[in-house]
Structures are given as C-alpha cells and as structure tokens.
Length: 241
Image (cartoon, rainbow, N blue to C red; front, side, top):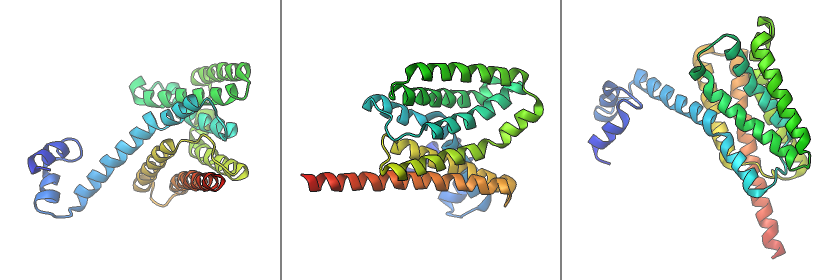
C-alpha cells in the first residue's frame, strides 16, 4: 500500500499525525502513541460488539428456522445484563444518543428470546414475556429507587458472565452447540476483551477488572466449543458416508 494512502487511512481515524510519524516514519515504538492506538482499536471493538454481536445470531436462527441448543436462561440473563445500563441511563436522564446502541442490542436480544420460545411452540408465552419485560423496563426507568438502579448496574458484568457460563454448561450437556453463531461469538469475544482492557486501565487490579477479564475467557470457551463440536459433527458425518 502506498505510504500516502496508508497515512490518509490512519491519520484522523486511528491516530494523530504525530503518532503516524513516530510509528511509521521513524519506526519508533512510542508508548503514548501505542496506548492511544490501542484505545482507539478497543473502542472500535466495543462499538462493533454493541451494534453487531447479536445480528449474526439472529439471522442464523431465522435462516435455519430453529433455535436448537440456545439456552433460554442464558439469553434471559443476557437480556437482563443489557437492560441494566439502559435503565440506569434512562433513570439518570442521559442523552438518548449516549445509550441508543444499548437499546439496539437489547432489542436484538429480546427478539432472540422470543424466537427461542417461538420455535419451541410457545409463541404466546414469548409475546407475553416481551410485553411484561417492556413494562418492567418502563417502570424501572421511571420509578426505581437510586439504590435499586445502582445494584442493577453493579450486577451487569456478573449477569453477562452467568449468561455465558450457562450456555457453556448447556453445550456440554447437549454435546453440541446447536444454532450458536460463530461470528456472534467472535464479536462478543472481541468486545468483552476490549471492555477488559478498558477496565484494567481504569481500575487496575480490582475485583471489577477480574470479572471483566473472566468474560472474554468464557467467550473464548464458547468459541472453542463451537469449533470442536462442529469438527466432531463433520467427522461423524464423514464416517457415516
């Protein structure tokens, strides 16, 4: 790639011109510039996770017409985890653009929960669940006490971790990963890794950081399960042929 093209691509998007000069002209591993670029990349990872992580999973369920292997408990925990920052932001009257991506991801996950129940033949139950969930969200955002909102916000990471742990156990018990999306897991792994890096920078070696570091580890386990079970299924199919 031409150096001018590379410069146009990087400067202003990932780094200031000063850092470009340090890293790509002088080939100097300038620590502040490296940290700046890392933070930019981490931010992109987190945004991709927020906007896109559940879309491949949603599309895969719709394409296959099945939610086999997906743990309802896992996705309900995931739904709760995504709800907490939305309720927190609404209760504190944050500008909508500051938490709109969370609402977008929340809608995706709520749709997945509905589809899990729908493909189990429990469409009415799924509809009532989403209506009830929407009502509770509205009430919490409007009337919940500050103490309750704080507890919900604090429990977000624990809910994410529990969600992944439940799905891991479900995969192990089933002996397959069903309709879990590999791409969704990759995006989730990248996003949770980004959040862990931010937590390390902001909180150091705190208990919160430990939780944030556990999340990408569990995402990686899920990814390994998908790859291993897919390979095993492929080997069995070849033997049968």
